[in-house]
Length: 213
Image (cartoon, rainbow, N blue to C red):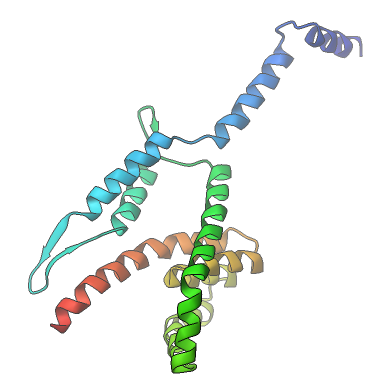
């Protein structure tokens, strides 16, 4: 007990003892886990835009570009490297969660404000025809994934929910899946499928008009 009191008294007196060093080290480690490099993010985005601007010639189709998917590809490459000398390419988990939730909120708010009037006008003009067609397209994408994942490959439901969210490319579905199954599997399934599906859909939009001509 006297040893504990002596250590506490020495800390209160301002002496540089191991206990004080331990507290400072813990504070520094917490601060480090919440910081990220703005320079790394800026360089990564710039490299991604440059990658997306590259024209790729395809026989019989013409030239296509990756567009915004170039940012996604560069993020995957730099995320694999994690660090180049003193430049970090990763975002700490705490900052990642904050940015993801903030981005999802802004995304949903913008989609609602931008699509609200058009949605009402479309329903007024065509009735529920467009809504029905949208539901059919969504079911054509989701049902095969659910059947294959749950009944053929016997995958856990939370992982299949993440794969469905990644295939649809909708972070709102991922947020709902995380509420239904509060595990890491929805995020893993989403992260596995989303990059490939996004690149395929962007290239599909560029290639289909050339094939129709």
